[in-house]
Length: 404
Image (cartoon, rainbow, N blue to C red; front, side, top):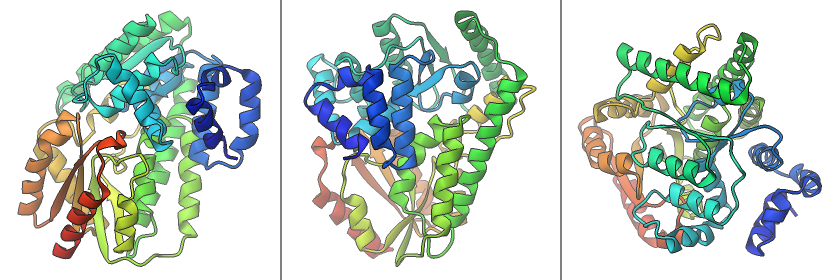
């Protein structure tokens, strides 16, 4: 039995909360963890350290820079990534219903509803602080404020301006300096330059491995399984600055270099996130020889990080996100990545409850059309499988591929 299978069973029978807070149980889980993939091993280690309170825990949003938390000796615990993991274990409906019973509406982001269900069911560890940004997600800061209120801990929020201007970077830098000061005061620990050097070194090397993976994916035919790449998006953001991030992506890159090419009839670029539950959509794409050769979040542009000016470096990293600012910026980035990966078309998965993704989808489709790039918009929920219809999606995907 694998560790993930054991944890799934314990959640289903209601005994997982005892298991998660037991040092002896975690030692037992470590034996099973050896059979897991490296990303799953990271998840098990994260859970063990957080629930056993080996260091103070910081709940973080997806686009919050985990390097800051890691340099200060915190455990970054990304709640949206945790929600995706629960969905991948096919346990999402259990916790979504828990949130909905407490009047959290279905028009809210599924990631946040699922994480709220985990919180209300008592499955989240006790944090010391909640750290989030306003980047991209309209409802994120409200969700994280609610979590902080529930656990009675501080919520430190970064307001991210739209666009990578000098003024925007300076504003984010000032907020990072204030946030670092507040955290150092709370933790009674200062981040030294050697801490920043170590964390930024891991972050740089992880991104270098990701760049090599993107180059491998651009080969014709591609050997990068697109659905696995989309699985890695949350891990890519959450592990930046830790040895786990470097280990995960270096190991994956080495595996890909040994992987023989597969049959490839179509090359696709994926926008936004994937459905994380056991969706047969990707099997349907493989049957038609359709390869997802790149996705927009994995292709995040790298900004050099200088340990002598950590806040300025992280501000530049945050503001470099191509989805910040006018829709034309995200469109230009998508076009450049389609060209670089030699993709023939784009699939945009519009996650229900995500205002920025769903709201901009048709503008992106029209802009891509003008650039000569066909685009298919699929509507669904990334973590809630209850409204998922394979046959409807298969019909639309097959029609799109025929058009290509």
